[in-house]
Length: 219
Image (tube, rainbow, N blue to C red; front, top):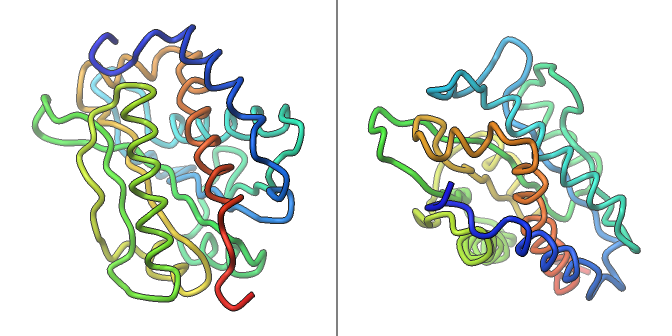
């Protein structure tokens, strides 16, 4: 996947070296990673038959694995750990109950245009005390995936997605669209098992950096 993924071996080693820095305060913060779709809701289906629900679960599990291997892991929870369907309202309730500092929803894109490609990052149209922090995190995630893995950036956008709308009042809230399964290159990329950990690394690194510079509103 020459257009999307840079030298995998070098990028992976470089990012793994970076992941140990700046984690002194990270253990006190909490992140909920929302794993999109699941169960009878497959989400987008790639031109090669791969399903969005499986791709995002693999990415989330890779983030957990790398986090657990770090010296000072973040406090991360997933909205689902297996191929099950969780309602949107239950996903957002989990973030509220756990008093999450960050809510990150993982998805993949699809388009009738087979040439559509790249990363989209969404934040809530609804405004709150966490809006600026959400926008900042969105831009940083987009930049991290573009510079370190070569994914094209399609911009940070505002949307009224339920998971964003119902979490923005309590924490920073971002939704990631991690490439187009309708694009030949990006769908093929997700056929490779090593791709999930390579993609997970810059996401986790950005979460670590963000958490360590984050002060909860009202603290």
